[in-house]
Length: 277
Image 1 (cartoon, helix red, strand yellow):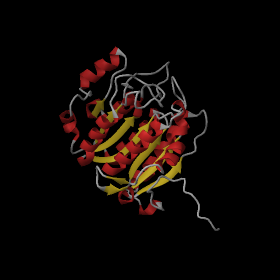
Image 2 (cartoon, one colour):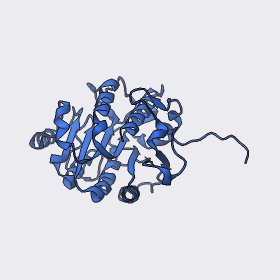
Image 3 (cartoon, rainbow, N blue to C red):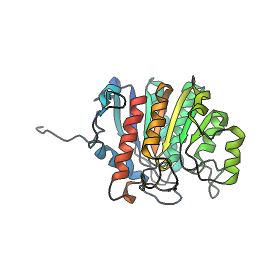
Image 4 (tube, one colour):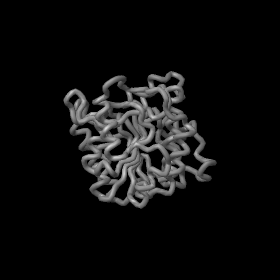
């Protein structure tokens, strides 16, 4: 073939899985979305938007290609089959972890975090979870469904222990969920509150609705009074010395922000997370 051809992979991705330290996996699933669907379209749109980024981060004094990440593309999910979708995510994440690589999921809705954490827990055992979100996600079920983006942290707590979860930016949920956070002291108010997780392997999950809707209108469940981008970026920078073995960034629904600013913001969050992994 002649060419040159434009790449649809994330900017800075290495060419092969074997040469990577981090594997990026697109997770186009929003099957349990309870308000505004559309996060399934985020992974593809983020790849295209990534070419608007500089690959150099002055904050970390590092280029993306120094992170040695491989964009594996998007998993193909069976429409309407949540359990099989979760099984596919878990088996792929397990493959990545068992190859002693780090996992970076790009959602999609927040339920996609659960199978990745299951795989990570199976590999590493002593696992801590750092969770950025507007919502508690600690419901026992949502409309009778235990596998839901509204109950994802409840399911995760059942396998890692709620005492191993720290939650940042939470401002919406049921009273029972806030009671559960108080019982296990999961809600973080200051950076020192996450020091108890230092020394553990860490899975970092960022629901982008942790950001204020003035910054992030392109999400399924926007919630006022959120973080500004600079505040989230400072949190991510603080985590650079933690042992992060897995991460995901979820809940961008790009079509609710026709300016595409939300998508641009999330590409930079992804770049920041790659820099600390």
